[in-house]
Length: 229
Length: 385
Ligand SMILES: Nc1ncnc2c1ncn2[C@@H]1O[C@H](COP(=O)(O)OP(=O)(O)OP(=O)(O)O)[C@@H](O)[C@H]1O
Ligand SMILES: [Mg+2]
Image (tube, rainbow over all chains, first blue to last red; front, side):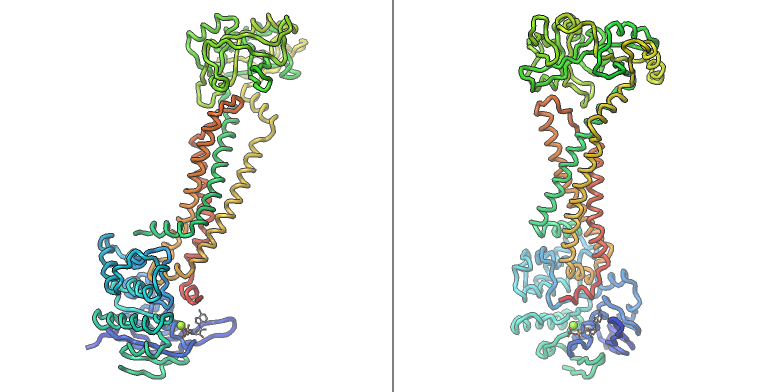
């Protein structure tokens, strides 16, 4: 029995750059089921980030429908989308994007400021998340005092701390060496397998994509092939 | 952790920039507080002038004398409570540099007209009873270390005694205080009789008269009655309300208010540019961080508020410290014992005004970065890598 989390129907996304109109997607269809771990690959400019942005509700399609658990999100207001993101999506970026002046624990706590958890509950959740990424001993460290891999683990903790259903990762290992990348990918795999997080990950790295349950190849705005693990 | 923690962390992340902008605001508000206190002290001469007091001077020029006989004639005018007369003595203590605002007055009526000078009944009686008695204001007493009972010689740079010396002996019978904090207490007053009988110039002249009226609303009638009495005489008079007299006197010093306002305005403008620029830079550096906050789900309005409160905090911190420093400076001035300086007070209206300016400064310097942050587009901000 499977449950559809994301359902994209006939999605179009156009950008205008000067007089030119760029058709990134011209009728894209995609379903992502709950518990899936999807890797999206494709050449530069094929629309991977644009797709991720639309899934994450930071960008909206020019036309077509995007539903999440059966509810349309493509026509939500900016404020409603912000709330929706806060409850449903955890974001992981290539360059970690941590606040440099905050400790690891404070960085992880950020999304919880959008909930009405008490300070004590927030602290507990932060500790749990940091433990999960194996950084219980680095809570007071600032980002610049940590390695790239550690910073990305803090970012993962930040993405999962409010327990969203969905994790969106844009080249999460793009800035890391092989060994560290494998560490991060195993972590994502664990979150998918043991914690039921649905994950969509954009990557250029075929080895990274192997951690996913299925790999979608995007080119010129459409999926040209799919490999299932 | 709450939003305020984030604001604070952002504020303090660049220590050098924080220090510089704080310093600039600090200086601006220190200047503002101090100058405003000065201005208020100058204005207070006008503000504190009694509505029921008139000054009668020689119509040609207020430095020209009037005959002593005028005193008794003015006393007969209707609507008058009391009249006194004063002569500028041109006094100095030991060294001409130590100039003293010292007057020979009618000791019987002086304190009835200038009732903002506070001394006890015993002191008043002692002063009246001693021909060489002197009352000095606490500001003057503090500067020269005088106290009640001291016998001091005072010279005049205008008059000399009949024996040729320019030195007079006095006994301090009272150190008077002011009814209000800003009442001028730098003056010295002694008996006209002592002055008139010992000095070698032509006697029986007075400098000017102070007149207290029964009803300020009828000052016009009293003024007319006095001046009409002496019209077409060799010594015509001009009687004006004390307030008008003080205003005219201030105007002669030059338009100090305008100068002060220009200084303050220039200071604010510079601060506005410095702090505003630093805020814009600070927000530009944080473009991707703000985009991440928005991505996580922070709403635009909340980000707007955080940026704006950052600049307002900055202004309140620097400005508050500056105001505190101006308070210290003012105390230093007041304690310096330089009698020529008026008593400076950081009045509530100055503090309120400063707070308003701080909020304004924080608001103006923060509003544009705050709008920038509020409108920041997540996608373009994050694709800048
Ligand atoms: N805000 C925008 N304005 C105009 N064009 C855009 C904008 N964002 C993306 N594009 C264009 O849309 C296309 C897809 O961009 P996208 O960033 O999604 O590619 P990508 O697959 O993530 O590439 P990369 O692998 O380099 O990250 C590109 O041609 C890009 O120039
Ligand atoms: Mg991309």
